[in-house]
Image (cartoon, rainbow, N blue to C red; front, side, top):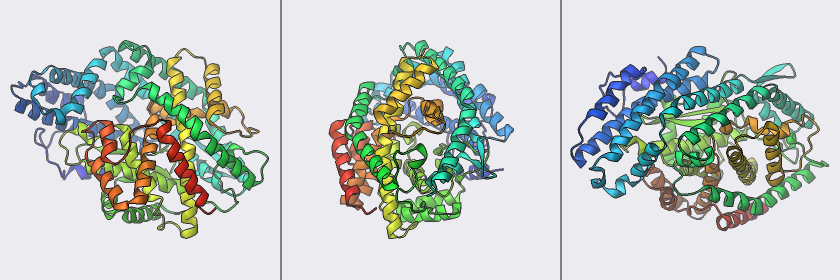
Length: 575
């Protein structure tokens, strides 16, 4: 029995439709509930609302089963039975759930009483279900399963990657930590070890991706779309913006952010006394100071983060304590653990779980603050009865997380003295600026990939290099120069969540606005933030931004003044 089994023994939210002893580990045990909902007569608006609540309860239970299997697998990619359990769900259970869900969505969309439901309450739900019915194709189910299996293979590859350095076997996060060290020779060695290890698997990784592009293109065409880009916009529920808005974001970042980032890079080059920066020079302190090391143990990370949340608002500290008390944190980096970090919600328990790979870095603090913002979002919506509304659009979910980073960067005393706190804050603001061109580059690359699905690997490399010229830096590539043309293979999003990345750019602009509001009036900013989180996904995206006191836009008119504010703040800050 693990932490999830313990939590399920005493559910805070009791079942009303499902039997208390029902389990959902096989399709045979799940199917009768979908079948009953499909057979049930819905003879009035009241009956339809009851039907929706019962469906929501069922969806929460089966979603939680998949989430638990995913968490167990990513925490221990080296345990075969956990991998098998997750793949069993992907291959044998999820396709049946999608078929049954489509039948229920179709029943809902066709129901004569749907129009009698309160419009304000059900507008967002309605349009989402209509889109799901429009997109569903039976022939896509096995293609989605294959795509998921390729994604899992990618995560397994990266979870197993280690490299030797000075006689020690280190994971990639542990090697990346060394890129912050003052010794340039050590940084170069660590960078070469990490990159060299990834290049060993380049052929398999690119082959995986070739197959993914083919599968995704076929999925889009089966659904009647000319390419996966247009399909995925619909599939991700991007009702409030289009690919053209993304292109406007790319252009605004290129005009207003890239020059500022290049100024910062040139300043770094001068401070380090180098003729040219190399890839291993970008994370170290430019003045040669030792790297910020805010904690040595995971316990220290948790304690410090709790104190930061307390300083932002006591409610956040109390909610973070829930995660710690219920053992809903897996934070340390170790061999056999999937890369990256995430927050995932246990839908029936209505509790968040945070996963990351901490290695003692300043970036780790911000990762936990980020995932903490997601967790507070999940906790803010616990009383929402419809599981679909317990999740906001991703663009606003990332405001919750990035906004928490921005507010917290003003309250880092738990980890640092005044000098290092200012240094960490400066590093974060610079990283925010540097992130925006990277987001534009990743998003533009994905646009190109799926608009040119028959591209060759050479053409793909050329497209990536062209975007480097547009959004990147002039670096020295004396070591492993081939990495420059394929560095995208280390970005999990290309493989596991296709076309998911512009959300970070939209959200970062919202988070910067929240930061401005926080500096002007902390209490009001936090109050608006909390109010918007509690809405979950019950309102359209622009209204969620508005509820938080933010403007939903990602064009030059929005970006230019935010860039000016960050520049002015950096100019006033000490080194």
